[in-house]
Length: 127
Image (cartoon, rainbow, N blue to C red; front, side):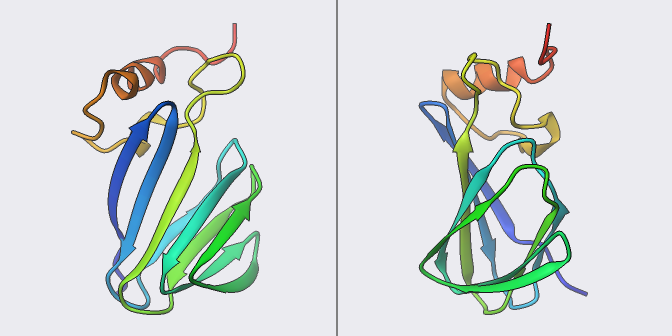
């Protein structure tokens, strides 16, 4: 059975960073999609990313661009692989509509901007 990566989350000046530490080759970040374009910085190791059924292999260092609404899954190909998803917390209207509440781990973010962003997640995006 494969494990998931260890996750650490940070937020500074409306920039969200989600660190994924894949301790073992074969660890999987399950398939998901986002409502925004984002980039994943592969800083150590290598990953296979399956994007809408198409597989690609990347080796560090590499910045991987992933379009919004495209289902993707990451699988570590080496032990001790390290990736960072990096994106803005808000759109141009300063509405926090990017991160679903269940994506923010308990205790993450100790600054006021992050706490404000978390509180806005439960408000309607439009209207």
